[in-house]
Image (tube, rainbow, N blue to C red; front, side, top):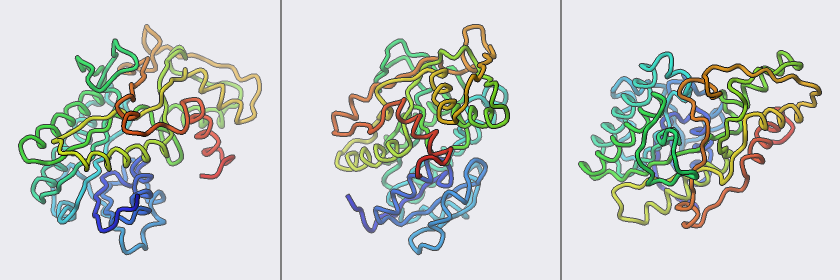
Length: 326
């Protein structure tokens, strides 16, 4: 559905998921303002929009509440808050980075939303807020929420900030809990890591953990499609806020991801070396070893993923290797 004459702010819009979201919003006819400090994102991801009169880019740091970016929220219809430090591993060695980038920045964004009377906020949260859930697949109403990483805990804190701002100030907040999102433009994660390692040494692949880690993976094209689908549905309701899982309906083991990458790179007899960073074989301290989201709530609205986890991984690998058109 084409939506014209709407203004959207996309924080982190030069990043991985954010830039794909920007592409879809521009295709819908939105006026789009991207705010990004380019710490994780790249201008290359959005350069094809720079000469479009309906597009504006502001290089700014959301940790600093300043008119340079706050004034851009004026007359906005929706803010897609996707700016964050996405590296879960970072939080185990330098937790302040995630506090500042993912929680302090969220507070500043919500203040800009409140002070400019923006009606809607869509927040990119994460499956890590569930911690090591005892119910799999895990539904949105699962409790208790016990994150095992600082990344997960500050994302959960940011969720509660959104909920409170909805109740206090009438802001309509849509919270999206993403599974592992993969695809072109990503610059971190297991697929990029394995490809880079194999390019350096095609004979040996170092794998963090015991390789049995099992998680849900969703292609970024599906992730963005689902996000905008849910946002359209959310706008039709009178809810203060809502929460949705967005992911695939299956999972894949890390060692299976390695197998797909080795196959697509045309390599033979690659030796896997497992590096045990924790006693129970997870990738690093704070890594959730098994994750699968329940997307029943999303499916009941009429949306389903086009690719399962294995298909999404293979498609991503082929896109990164240049074997499939992006």
